[in-house]
Length: 159
Image (cartoon, rainbow, N blue to C red; front, side, top):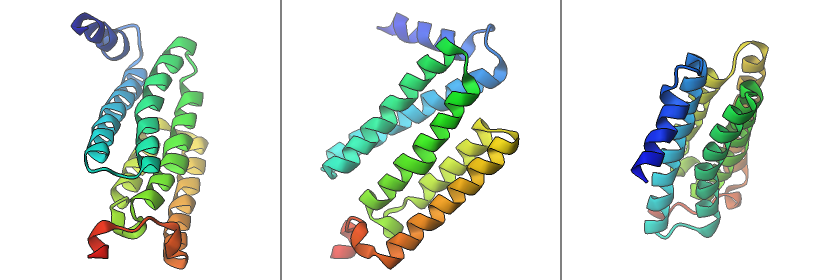
C-alpha cells in the first residue's frame, strides 16, 4: 500500500516529465481531495445530513478522478475548467444551502473557490469564471436572505 502511494506521488507530483504548472494543479487536486476526505469524516462523526455527506463524498471523489483523467488525456485546461465549474459553481453552492447558509461558515469555501479560480484558469477563461462565480456567490447569499427556508437550519441558531 505504501509503495502504491509513493508511486502515485512520484508519478503525479514529483515527475520531471510533467510541467511545473501540471504538478501544481495535481497538488491542488490531491490537497483538495484530502481536505474533502477529512471534512467528510468530520461531517459523518457529527451526524450531518445525508445530502451534505453525499456532497462531501463527491468533493472527495471528483479530484481523484480528475487527476487521473487529466494526466491520462493531457487535456489540462478543459479539466481545470470542469473542476472550477463542478466545485465553485455547483458543489460549494449546494453545500452553502445544506450547511446553514449565511450562518454556516461557507464564506471560507467561497474564498477557497476564488483562490482555485486564480490557480486553475488564465486569460479570458479566468475573467469568465471569476465573474460567473461572483454572480453565483451573490445569488446564494440573495436566496439565503430572501428565502431562508431554502437553507438547512444552523444548529447554533436553534438554541
